[in-house]
Every structure is written in C-alpha cells, then in structure tokens.
Image (cartoon, rainbow, N blue to C red; front, side, top):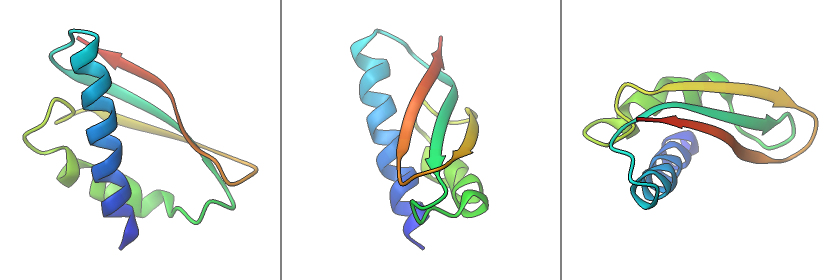
Length: 80
C-alpha cells in the first residue's frame, strides 16, 4: 500500500516545518489531492494515524479535499 509511504513522508515533512516554526504539536493538516493522483483517500485516512504515532502529528486531524488533477499538496497546517 503506497499510501503508508505517502503518509510517512507527509508526517516527516510537516514535522520538519513544525520544528522550524517552533511548534510542539501538529493539530490539523489540510491536503488537496487530485483525482488523477492515484491516491486512495480512504486508504490515506486509514494509515495516517499509524504513520503519525509517536510524532508531533499524533492525534492530528487530516482533512482532504479532492480536486481535479494530479497534485498532492499540503495547503494548511495548524500547530500548537
């Protein structure tokens, strides 16, 4: 399941951003996912909590908006 690898990479990227900004915890991550990206929304939502375990993103809400295209973008992140 490539969504687990994507979720792990996502967590690593948002953790780096949070660290750089001095945030201790990631509360919410908003993604835009293209309908032609090959990402299975339900699978990504399912594996995200496993990828986020014991990280600053543990317990974070993952909000996904499906749009036309091939993109997978982090459009917003809420931190504490």
